[in-house]
Every structure is written in structure tokens, then in C-alpha cells.
Length: 616
Image 1 (cartoon, rainbow, N blue to C red):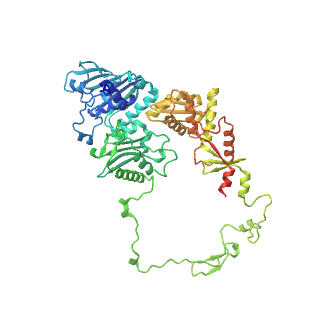
Image 2 (cartoon, helix red, strand yellow):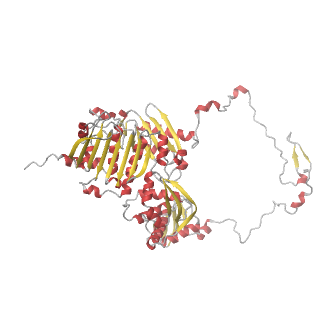
Image 3 (cartoon, rainbow, N blue to C red):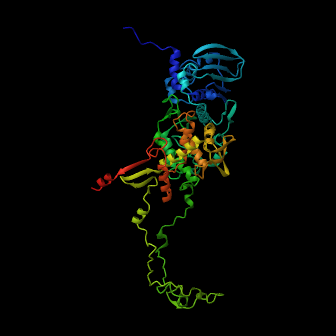
């Protein structure tokens, strides 16, 4: 039998490796910008066309590369960051595997212009699909200029599965956010199709956060500053009253590297326990600084998951730091131990000898129901009293106003025939067949047993069918706001909202782009009954981001589903009897009353036989 195992060609091996490292255009942006940071750049410019499909350009003023280094950089496992295996366990740079450039060159056309600061000429390299087309000297600026064109041109299957331009642009914006927040001292700009999304100058952490998420967040930030022998924690958390219903302002950084850490996120959420509005997320921008030898950043290809040696200890320190910050700003009760000396602490009793309980003097003859002529005045000493009329200067014969109105406490009130003394439970049940249970379910008796209805899912179904009817009939009914509301989003959410504005206009929303990621709401759909359209928009964006549907396919239906979920009656809301009956009537008027717009069960019937079995 002939040998069947053989080495893969470098071009094929690089394409396979690219599948792990380069998942989408945002992956290219991340790898190249991190390389620019490692090169000591203080200014980084990112230019994108068609969400990275056509062009990704990264320009930096870093140290640049020689002609030999420029050529070696595209080889697999070629890196300047590590020399020995022990270096892997003390990583202080961003990119260190030496796979990024080789992976990018395998699935795109790459043009590189780079020059060291002390050289007159730089180097130009053109690579297409891992094949070097040309390499020659060139006159260019100091630093490095990468142009990545026609991403996945030779891997059509990967290109086919890219999402729409707004979705891919959102991922790019997210990567720039993470890098810019981790490195506030570096100037970073992002342009898409010639339009500026970010123009960030070098500054401190707080100013960088405000410049990226809007000036309104500035008054919302509570600083963190805890320094221990295990870890140093700095950064900011948001006030609970400003928590949003969208998830997007939650960031962890360790040694200037963004990371995802569900365990630490749980510590943050527990610190905010019982002080957060329901279904909301607090903002946090938390920076960990510790010895690189105490973490392992080499457990995931994208290096966003990091393992900590002292994870449990850091969890406790993080939670204590957040609670201390909340206490200092009077968000939660706390004890200020620095001012303990000013507390009024009583001295031990033996310093004062015998301590006697205070005497309380009582007038046993006092009757509050006596008329003014026979009322007694308590002298307050010895319990003696003397009868004397109450004198009020300037007021005479005022007692006659109340003649005949004195209450008679000996008589019992007559029972009214037409007014029940007590509304008994039996009468309530016969009057109202449907009741609310746990402010979440509606219980209503039917012939075969007991019907249980999920109130939120039921309302979702009602709103969804109304919205779809509006779309099908093109009957846009917009209710204008008496006072238009302005709100600001981060760049990622603003891009998403801009992409779905046509669908929102078709549903009856009157939302206008106000510039700089700000929007103004002039009107809302007439089918919605909400006093807070901004919360509806935030919930809509969160539902829309989590929707599995393609943003380009069935966009209006997806928006209708998300809007119905965002606007439905929340769990925990008490309903009046009339509202319960109206909800049930509207539900059974729907075409599909049994299932929510996302296919979840709305109602279930518990047979009468099951009740009888419970009591046997």
C-alpha cells in the first residue's frame, strides 16, 4: 500500500491557520493594530472600505521594519516578541505567536510599506495568497502602512459566510473600542468609507471613556482604585441609576489587554445586587495590573480568554473594591472606618456609679372623651390634678359648633343592607375569574381545568401581530411626541440603529440622526403605549443584536419581533382585573395565540383530573 500521509503545502497550511486567527475583517484590524502598539506607535490610523471586504488600511508611526524583517514577518511563527519557551509565561506584548501576518497574507492581497526612523528608504512588499509578487525599496513615511485588499478572495466559502456590512462594521468598532480603552495614551482614528467614526487623541482613561461613549457618561462614572500585593485594580464603574438595558459598556483589561471573564463579571453583578433596575446592566471599565507570570494569555487563539493563577483571591478583591466605591458615593450603606474616632461611643457604666431608670409620670384620671367643661389639666407633679375650664383668648362659644355631633361610643353602628361589611374571597372569585400569580402568570379556569398564561409572552404575540399588520398594510400610524427626546449611543449601537432606521420608520418611529452618535425621537408607533421610548429603543437594539437572523434577510420581521419583546409587559408588573381580561381577549384574537413570536409556549392547561389526583 502506498504511503498516504504527506506534508501540506505552506499555502494550504496558512489558510487552515487563518481559519483560527482570521475569522472576519475585525480579526485583521485587531492583529495589525496590536502589532502597531507593540512597535511603539503613538498614532494609529484605521481606514476601512465596505466593512473590510474591499480594504483594511492600518497606518502607524512605530519603529518600522528593515527589508529583512519585513520579509520575515510573513513567515509562520516568525516573531520578535519571544525567544525561548519560558518567555511564553511572561508575555507583556500583544501579538507574540507570529501567525497573524502569515494568516492574513494567505487569504488576501497585502501591500506593506515600512521604514525605520533612521533610514532614508523603506521597503515595499506585495503578497497575494502567500505568494510574494514583488519586494523593492520605496520612499515612504516612518513607521508601517498595511493595506489588506479583497479579504478571503481565494476562500469563497469564508467570504460567503460574512455578515452584512453593518454587522461586520460593528465588530470592527468593538475591536477598536477595546484597544482604544486599553491604551488611552495612543491617538487612534477610525474611518469607514471616508466618514470618521472615531478621532481619538492621546489622553487619560476617563477622558478616553467620555470621548468614546459620550459626555453624558462622565457624571455617571465612579472611580476604582485598589492596590494589593496580588493585583492592582483601577478604572470606573457606572452608577446603578444610569444602568442601561443594553449590554455594551462592560470591559475588563489585564496588563492593557482586553479580556472576557464571566467569573469576574459575576463578581461585579453581585456587587450591584438589589440596587439595579430590573433587566439592566451596569457600566464598568476595570483595569487589572499584575505580574505577567501570574496569568496565561495563551489559552485561546484570539487571546481574549485569560487564566489567572490567583483567580479566587482577585474575585474577592474586585468585589470588595466595587462595594467600597459604591459606599463612598452613598450608593449602598457603608461604615467609614477612617472617621470611627468621631463616633459618639458611650463610656462604660461603672464610671458613673448607679444608673437609675427615668421616671414616667402618668395621670390615671385623664379621659380624652370628656367635654371641655369637665376636662382636667394635669399638673405634671405628683399626679394631682385640678378641674378648670379651658380658656382660649378671642374664642367664645366655639363648643356650640359641635352640638349634636358628639360620638356615642356605647351604640353599635347599624349594618347597611346594600353595603357589605367585608368583601369575602368567594365573592372575589365569582366576580373575577382570572387572577394574576406571582406577577408573571395569569390563571383562568376553563372547562377542562386551569389555564396558565405567560403574561409577557402573550403581550409579545399581541404586539407582534399588530406590528406585522401595520407593515403588510403600509398603515404607518406614528404618535408624535409632545417633547422630542434626544439620546446618545456608543459607536457600535449607533451604527446598528442607523442600519435599521428604514424598518423603524416603516413601523411608525420618527427617529432622526442628530450627528456624533446622537439621535432624536419625534414620534413612536401608535400601537405602542410607552412613556419611555428611549428604553424601548435600547431594549430593541439588545434584542436585535441577539437575533440569529441575518440583518439583510427578513429585516422588518426581525425588527417587529425585537420591538414586541422590548415593549411587552415585563415580569413583575401588577395588572388590574380589566387589564388581565383585555390581555386574554386580545391574545385569543391573534392568529397564533399558543406561541410567542420566537416559538415559545404562551399557555398551558392543567387538567381537572390532575387537581383531583393531588388531593387523593
